[in-house]
Image 1 (cartoon, rainbow, N blue to C red):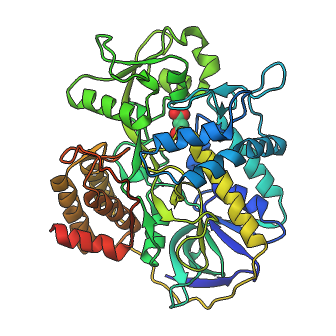
Image 2: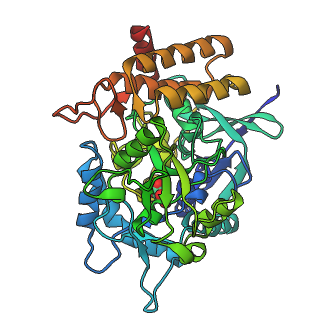
Image 3: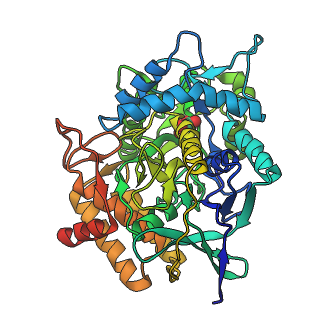
Length: 506
Ligand code: SIN
């Protein structure tokens, strides 16, 4: 296949991914040039557009960034970096106002104040929303329009496959599949903003293309990966046989919807009930389903006739499956929703390799620890996107000579289906050493057959990290290690270490 080489202008930053993190970063880079590389036409394919909740920020009278940071730390199972929690909480209100000034039509009350939703484990109503459950879609529409109009931003179509290096571990560009074959984009600054890993699991709320490409590319280049074992499972994906599974937003539970079985018995045994931290609710739903009790969300009394106006996205997904949530129970199941782990980034969004930065779901900044607080993801994405933009705007332009790379193989469709089933079974809501070791064997066998495709690399990192963490903490539940160690330890791993873990387990 033809390989073209395109040298980007000296001051250009190449951003992989056109979701919220990538576009917000590009918009803040001026006067430096931004080239945003995305696999799909720019308005499609990003998980950000599917976000129903909104942006968490201490905007209410009586709320404070301190309280928001404290909730973030409390929920994160001992692994949140308190300084990062404080940083995102402090930036939150200003950045939500900035999005509003760009044109995002956040819901407002008669006095012009933000209408805020309550979501699980927040001590206050704190989620700035748009038209009920349309925050992600609406924010992305505004940012895409702004990016298209910005003369310092170029939107390029192509699927990033691998990072280019200079041969000394410094990042020098990106190899991408483009319309006319393969293109090597060479530049001294690359930012991964390519989203998460939900598509590695059989049941996910993410776009199917979220298969850990950013994680795999960075790991192959030698970057440190943090907390890969921490995958958040959303407790209430709609269990209606669709792939991806439509989400029934947590804000429904914030408005009083209950989790019940077919007989109406409540599923969550916790002081905070349905608004307990997400890992606890996900395990309750998972265990009910595993025991043959189909879990349901009951919004009939709490929301009832207001459903179509309050939650138009969920309402239309329900109705398309023949479920009228004003009168019917909504069948639900946990689904892979968000990766708390990712490419390790410092407080400025810099990864461990020169020339590489990372933000959004692909990053592991210490903001989410073992269990992300609802709607902190969009907040973290814009906080770090802006920090990276501020840093790169003022930094010297670096030029490196890129070595050519070979495109990693594609994972055949049947192997992908096998991988997704195996990840759901062995690296899902509950894990065991034997299941994870078997999963790593399965990944190795696929790799021997098809080569090191990006989804296999990303899956290996998750499975190996999950095997190494011999305790239960946050979203990482080990049935064979139900205890939580007294000392909370952040995890970090390179791809070489993940391969060794597999060898040791064999
Ligand atoms: C939801 O609306 O339930 C999802 C919000 C989030 O994942 O932060």
